[in-house]
Length: 314
Image (cartoon, rainbow, N blue to C red; front, side):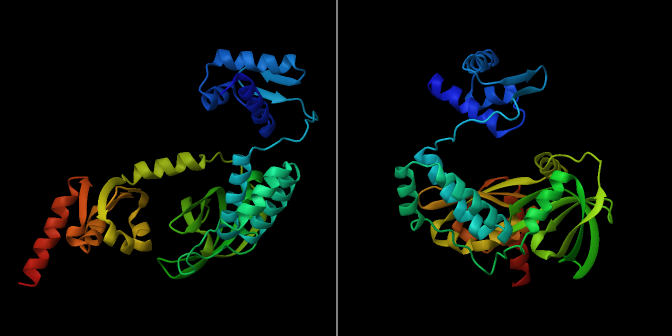
């Protein structure tokens, strides 16, 4: 990246957040802290009112306005692609706000980029199965996000799938994440006095209460990493013949599916699971159409199941 392009990108980064650390800038552009200091000084010499505080970071003086930002074709295309996901994978309120933001983004695009988006719009689609995905009720994600920002306690009516019971909970939200075809709310449950994972489509009612929490909860990423360590998740890597890989469908998500790689006539899939016995029973149905790469301890698990089958049907 040319220096002038990097300095412009740093300026945009400074506008995107209230405070930006020099370390974050250095990591983003793979440059030294000394280079960051030099680039910041260049912006200051250009008349940008940058405030700096040792140990905290840089910020642009409040109230300082800059001309509209011009987006590149690649950035404009990324916005459009994201819009397609938002339409299908979020609640109605989030979709409406994103569309409003898209109008503002399109307003500052050059004519060439506007034409590009109009042409691409009909060439991008996100298709999901109605049997595996249920769109959250209106405003539920926005309500959760607002309460995370305000540190406001949420009251929810929740249906637990494992017990077939509905309960009313008060929770302190720490984040939302999407996996296994569903949005999940990660929060500290005051009823159970511990962190819990709530599937958003099982929340029938949600309401902020007039209580705010001061407890410092872990960041969502830290919490998920901690849970992975506590559950001692094992990485399982298996190659499926392409002819049978398509039959894994949505079942693979129940066994901790993480990613897949096309290896020509095979599909290599990676899973994270705490239950080798469970995934061994599932893999057995694919007989000789799979190859287990790791862990090697999974092979005797499957051999034992085969021996038990032989004895049962002898």
